[in-house]
Length: 306
Image (cartoon, one colour):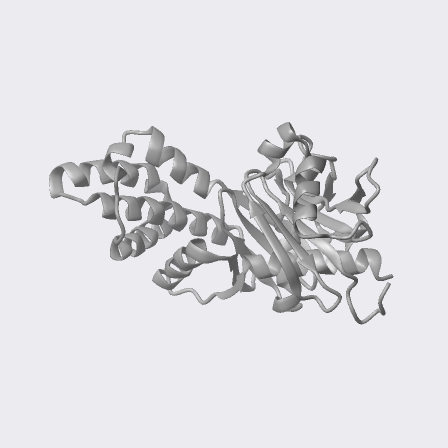
């Protein structure tokens, strides 16, 4: 084991519902190898979590003595080993302490827990995002933040001084998929190409200003196409903007004081940055891949560099 100021080499895994990401991390914290696949929890539950992990470890030549730190759906009830939840309010530093060791393996494999909000009026859970948050807050410092973590189920987290006081989940991504594919609006957005940035921004502002009209504005996409020649690209952009605008309105209604931080990558990061800009809101952005790697590294250091 190396000294207290360096991190022991380890393997870090972010195991989602439909995705698998693995990094081999060196003593100096650098990424020595990376693996990505669609072998998420749904797939691995059939083929075997140990089988999937071992195949990726063999592909990067990971030594048998290297420990593995895992976050995400591998710790769900339907996953590899249930890692449970820490209740909010919770200190982010408590996440590594609650890691669960995978039994029956020669290698030291630990799975991190999720977070649970057991409020009767606003029950909520997260799994995987807590590790991104652990990494992101290292960059954000001790100030109060409302952290937006977009995705299929977007999370808005109220955090300050290394502690999570509460959070809310918005099914924005899943609703976009369901509405665009399984409602009458599927005809309006079918075969939509690129463009529509102006339509997106306008829809964000409209939904944020009056979220109670959300379902009416949804049907307006269909009517706009029939009556005013609204293009499929603009209809799709408006659908996205209405959903994200409503999400931001809901999140801000229940938010605490503090700045807004966006933890996202790629297309989602650009989309939410455009939404915040349309609303005139300042936001600090942290790359989600960077955040989860940093969170996993912090957990590994807490576990194995004592």
